[in-house]
Image 1 (cartoon, helix red, strand yellow):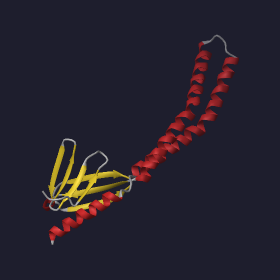
Image 2 (cartoon, one colour):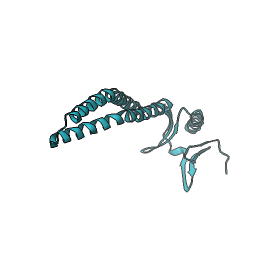
Image 3 (cartoon, helix red, strand yellow):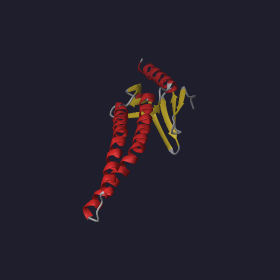
Image 4 (cartoon, one colour):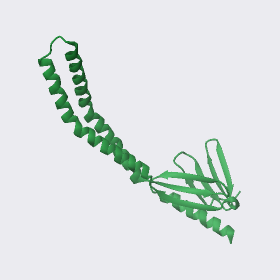
Length: 172
């Protein structure tokens, strides 16, 4: 058995091991052996998902809109409910209007909390965007295998460089 040239442990507990003539992905009950002769290309890239940033911006704008609308909506609905309650007669229309304005006021009281939660989610999504991910992609004739790590992972980049050197040495 030959000694490994390089190895890298992924976050999910699996491990990539490079031998002089193959790459082995093992962990748990899975084992995948890829001969270097079958690899067409190796790619490693640091990527940021712009969809995550777009979601963060949309949630932040929504949170700001809800937070801004909460005060005026609460004031208006509370004042309207007070006016109706003050002049309330025993008519069903007054009771319905009072219930509607009270419900709007209750909803308006929840808006700052909803805005805070949306803002927190936007902050988390922004952090995920900033961290990005490093992805190692092994390309075969018709298939690709991708191994991703959160953040800029220098060890995965170095593993890809060693793998690329091994692959280039086989071509010479």
